[in-house]
Length: 174
Image 1 (tube, helix red, strand yellow):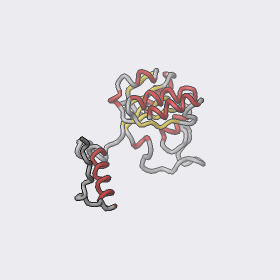
Image 2 (image 1 turned 60 degrees about the vertical axis):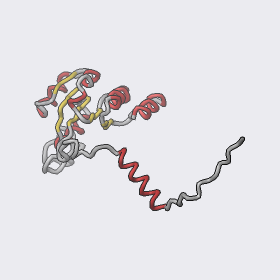
Image 3 (image 1 turned 30 degrees about the vertical axis):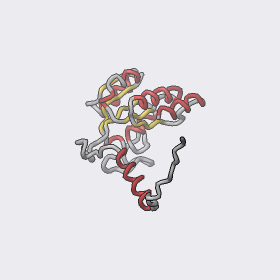
Image 4 (image 1 turned 180 degrees about the vertical axis):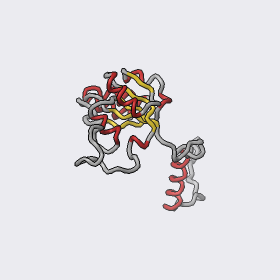
């Protein structure tokens, strides 16, 4: 004998306002714990790893797009004032295949750990929060991929990748 399925007529209709409110409440539950509850200082500086310390990386280290060779007050030099960009943050890792470039950057950031192989930087991922990749172009994708697999934020010079396969890999990892 077949049972008859009856529709429950006691259900009330959900209004748009209730639907949106419920969706926002559900999304808020998945948003994670706010930084102040995690004990993180909202005004604290980022710990940054610099992968490459010479050439274009000098402009990144200065935070104003200028190279370290420019003198203050020279035409085209950045205006003086409090540091902005990277100098205002905490550089904890320096890495370059050229030891002279690492030593030159270490004079500006003496507390930073020094490496000559960017793959070794990720042996201690708790030393930094974000990575700046200023390496030669053919290694941008690999350094970025390693940073993303360790859950780090990445700023990478262009080009990010050289082919579609690298671009898809980075997209899937991010």
